[in-house]
Image (cartoon, rainbow, N blue to C red; front, side, top):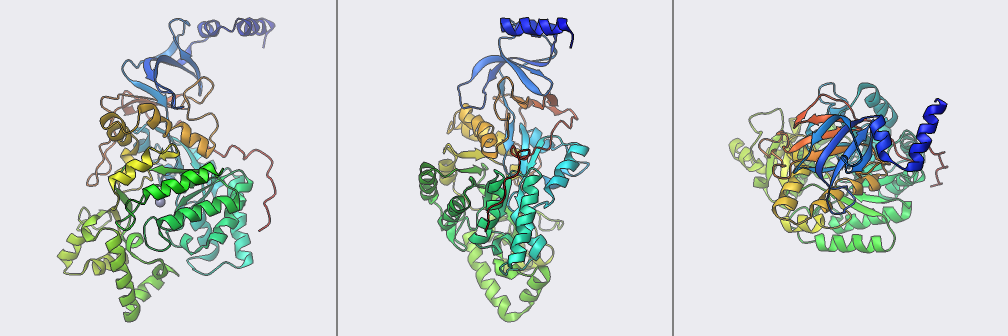
Length: 531
Ligand SMILES: [Zn+2]
């Protein structure tokens, strides 16, 4: 740097003048006259937003400050906000695929950062996955959990046994490697096999490893309904893990699933509120739909039937006494799910059943619904939309200040393409359950702080330029249960790390996302505590 330039910078700093710098170097992008909602929950204000490189460098009156830019966007009448952060997706395969790594279904919702490896499932090799994304490019930022179910499967297969001390050590080592490579924490899907075969103590042992690296614990709980320990028992299990492992905990896609537990949202909220008041760090995410997305097998089979894997399952189905016990339990599970008309087959290679309810498939095959379900499972299983939630529970959860937006996006369910705009459309703009600043906070700063993503989730100078510009008059989801892959509408511009990924409402071809690593990864690793 020349003496002259040093002097110029010094004068600029002394005058504390933005305009000197601005006139010297044009900004890369200047978004003018928008309704800025900054993600903190503060009321909206009229302001211009300037971006240079990958950062927001200016929020204010651009004309008065003499700002110029290479690209100017007129945002008159449009909302300008921090890009949304989705704490729960199933985008591992998409981001790793040459055709789908742009992550357009999320960009068109205004989502600029996704987290995956949720529900305890996904890539055990966290470092390798992040490195590959960095090398090949991805359309949104993305971060990973270490997935407990996959860790258990890597060490113990589909066994439902307790781990030996050596096996537990092997699992702890995999979690430690994932955390060292930059995972955000440990995810579990204690409802699903083989994650479900872990006791609470086994989970605590692994969560302690994540806690030692500053990670969080994210859980699809053991039971969101009345299958085993019940919804309230599952919330209490999460809270026990928070205490015993001394770790922040996060409840995935919070809900009350099935008629047995409808109305228990009040008690769940009371449990979480009192835990938070006692100092535990507890949060949750939620998608704005009344149907969950799962598979025929996961929704109806008891977990003991899956122990040992697919061949063991086939043997149990073929064995008459076991078959009878299986059918009896599946009948009860079907009642929990609201009966065969409440299960809509959404994704399967078998076009004769896609778009039909289990009741319709059973009638066409002259079988009972459970026998039809067993046929579907044996043929390779199928995705279902399971209509099992009540609007009143959904709304009670949504207004809690610790509940953020999450898609849990998976193929065959519209939430992958619609969650964020749908929440804005239905619960802010149409019914005013939340204010716009509240809904945007729940989709930006709240997840950024929960996941410990530095410099993201707020629209302010110095923060990463993940910025969205949308039209509140038109923003909406278009995906439905019948047609779940319709892109959302209303996002006019989406910037990811300062680059324009959505331009005038269309994907612009950029792979501007980054593989994000946990904030503490660089920090010297503390020794993991003894079991
Ligand atoms: Zn889940």
